[in-house]
Image (tube, rainbow, N blue to C red; front, side, top):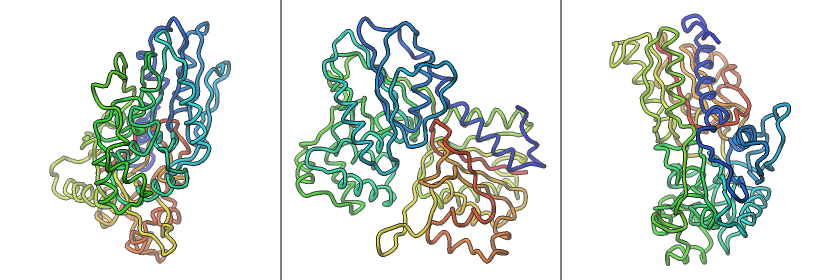
Length: 438
């Protein structure tokens, strides 16, 4: 498909780049090279994540029709793609809640762990892991209830902790994360196929690493809980402090012979978008696929860079596209009852910070969206920013700072018609940001 003209259709052009990034991360394009031959024994597919539905369908389409295949994978509600005509279902798919776990995720995790019982050295376990698995695959440590886990998860999400910190805590308060699922599969061979949604593509962080060794410690989890003022039941805190909830570490024999393959990454998707931009005659620059920090502050930094390009031709010459990825955070401001004051997610918060920093800079357009199609818990993937964003908002009596103060990106961009709504994309390589400087 030919890209829209960036000068006359800047929004459509940026949306085209986003879709190119998403397409690069779809499992059917990336799975075949990593599938082994069917084993002598059983092949069981287990997994969790927002890309779980499309990963399952890729395996079902590519696995030999005459070879046994079974299993269970859990994905987010409404994230199972339509089944292609003629594709036989051999792996069960169930849905659960994200980003806060629910009873359906707990039941799925219990069933997945039970399916590892009785495996032999002749058997193969294919684990399909993608972002979102931390909440979808929830099996609290002994002494921790689902309600406890839900509250802790909400507190982590609202704290401003980065994904590595959140998942360190999650791993040590779980019976299935942090390598424990792989340990339960012994002595079967385990091959993990994963789609990265984290800065650095560390498989021990993606979905809290249920099938890979965990180098983090109970002591680190205790420090993170203290840093962000997050309470857990006293008995569990004592166990953490004693190191009694430690995860399997690198070098553990439980991981002997295991393989991990990264089938899609944020960098690959950014490169796909860059290639489309270059084909349209623009220079494309990828800043990083590992950006972290408060979303609004990252937005302001991107705005300063874009303004320098627009006004001074530094450090890049215009016209150009500036791309970045990673996983930023939003520290949520709460009402007295503990609920968030506004609606929105990381991408929308970034766009508010960007718009504030750009101050209507002529010739600069931007789009930020989550590659799973859902920004936080709303129905939008992200938002679009144009030179007249602030002006159009003020004409409606909307002052940006008021919306920033309550983390209300959805409330700010919806009346402007500048939400980006795609629906679930069936993959997830995290944040996608594109700035067009004409």
